[in-house]
Each structure stands twice: as structure tokens, then as C-alpha cells.
Amino acid sequence: MLKRVASNCVVWIFLFVIFCLGCANSTLNKFVNNLSQEQVYDFHKTRWGMSQAQVEYSEIEQKSIIVYRTPETLIYKCRLGDVKALRIYTFKNNNLRCAGYVTQYPVKGKVDNRFHVLSEEKYGTPTFNQSNGYVWIHGNSVIYAKSYTSYVRLVVPSTLPTSRYIISTVGGMFAELDSGLPSKRSTHPNIIHRWSSVWSYTDSKFYDEIYDVKFPSHELSRAEQVLFGLKEERVILDMIQVSVF
Image (tube, rainbow, N blue to C red; front, top):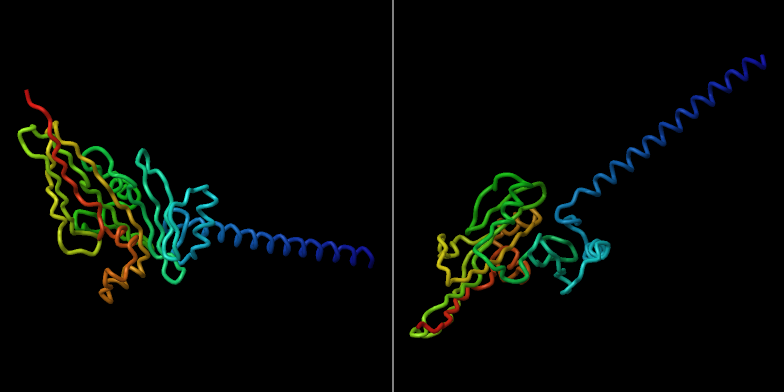
């Protein structure tokens, strides 16, 4: 009798241990799944709808240097390869809805489409092109990349007057008009080019809202207008005199 009771106790203990292990394994799986879900980001190390405090905490963990803060905007210094850039986040009602990179200063050289290339490597062929830029629709985000000439210096003979022209550009993520910039760049040795770029990510819900209600651009923050390519650094042409012997 005692042997039978002892045997039954061993069986129940064994079953109880199996049950506990199963629960522990289930809890572990949930933890791993939650952890993996947390690592799926919409932009950099953030997700759409995050509060400003959450985004700031993420940047603090990366020891980022903040250069600008308002209730609607956060801007940090960063580098994209050898290019100095700014990482921008924009909020509405304390919810992250748009983010991206812009070059901090015009970069010497003819237009470099490196951010377009990076997007192609990550997301494949662009969904469509818009105003000399390219758009990818990926997951919860709409990605936009555009590079353009932002400065030109031309050395001219001293017999010609010096002059300075500022050419406004029109274009962007939601514009119908082309920027009007020439597609061919001069290779004259006395011409110095500099380029600028924008590489933005937008919550697809916000993007759809803009199109559905014909969101007026003046209701966008200045940072969002920059990220959408609606505000660009103007193309400046300097004509510098040199002596001709």
C-alpha cells in the first residue's frame, strides 16, 4: 500500500514539474517574442506614436547630441558615413509621426544620390518617383530620398562683373511641379558644386491623412516641410572674379 502511494506521489510530482516547465517555457517564449517585437523599429530606434520623452530616452542611450528641442520637434547631430547630418523627429499631440535626416551643410561635389542607394539596398526598387526624389512604401512607413545642387561657384574673368543669384526651388514629396534644376551638371574646372539631401520617414497613417484631406502645407511644422522636401536650401550661384593675364 505504501509503495503504491509513494509511486503515485512520484508520478504527481513528475507531472507537476512538467507543468511548471511548460509554464516557464511559455513565459520565456512570450518574453522572447515581446523582445523581438520591441526591436522592430519604424525609424532608427523609434516607432510611430512614441512620445517625445520616449524618443529622447532612446537618443540619450545612444549618447546623441541634441541641438534643438520644442514640443513639436527634436533635432540631433549625427553622421551618415562621411557626411555631417541632422536627425529630426516631429510630433503632433506628443506622438511621433515623421522623422529623417538632412545634410547639415552643403557637401562639396556634384550631386551624390547615396541616400537613394541606401534606400534601394534596404527596401528595393522605389515605389514611385516624385519631384526628382524617390518614394518607397515599406511596412508602416513612407520613405522619401532626394539630393539636389544647393550651391554653385563659378570663377569668371575679371573683365566680367561679379554677381550672386539665388534660385528658389519648387518640389518635394507632395509637390506636382518639378524643381526645375538641370539634369546635366557642368564639368567645367572653374565650377564648384555643393549638394544637399533629405532622407525622410513618415508614418503611413499621417501620409494618407495628408492626401485624403488635402492637408495644407502651412499646417505642417517647418521641420516637416524640410523632411518632405517642400523647403530646400536654395541654389546659390556665386560668380567670382579672377585676374586674366
